[in-house]
Length: 409
Image (tube, rainbow, N blue to C red):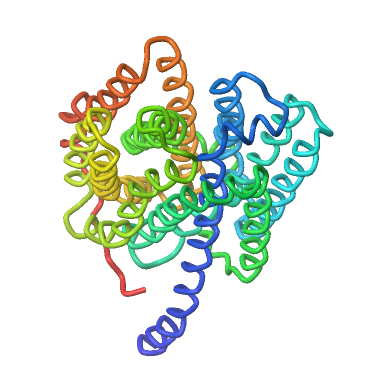
């Protein structure tokens, strides 16, 4: 009987790898679609009927993340209660594709005022987060080690953002709304591929939304990855909007070159996600998170002090390395701390905090930059990244974590 079970496990390995690949692809497309818009966002919002420069860009980017914040948790809770995730991923990806296309058609042709475009953007974000958050949650449902599975998510995030920035800059130069159409096509393809996913939601739990949320609230240790995720995504939001604007103003770069600068961060961030996720399975989560966050905060300040674009680009590569040390360990920590029955809401909560961070990075960065300049904005963000670790360090180091397991899947 034991031999038969082992045989079945071996037969299931290709299925696990296939599903891991498809889920990573969904995550990749979501992030690729988002970042496509960043380098040319100032020109795009003008085409969509906005006035006000940086403020309009902030609204356009922030409203999607507001939708992420509001709906990441409910999507996770719903999938836990229904016992299915794959249909919601398909629905979210295809719906998001329609949303991007609607913005291009209605906003790009002046058929909607900018306020109406923002409403469409919010609805598109509501559907996008279903695909993104539940794809990450499905990865925690798979065997193979949380570090391995979250490393796959991390490399998808990194590759999506690494390619999205330079490709988006180039597409913006060809046509202002072209990134919207490419985003729509990519999400439609991802939704079709997700039709073949096999659900592996832990069974035997018929929980209400309230009871699931209460379970998460009863695990205060989840606050650590939530807060770390918030600050890490805050820096990403900051660089997506303020970093891009800074590179263009300080070094006279166009949208394509600014996209390449962002890509210099996300390329090593992507390439190192998987190996460093597996590394965190071996050495634990604490050291990568603590050491990576401290170094990351210092490197943010160094980027602003760089006198030339060449040096700034090199420092962006360094930022990517430190980010890759932090990200998969933090995501895997959620899976380590959350019980099986509340993984959907736990990962949804992590995404809520992460999206709040991205939103805060854009809003705080925009407000501080507009009021007193780039230098204080970089100082604030760098201090937050390193400071949150310093503040939480004594208790975080005492946190008892479950044993990390690595499987061959």
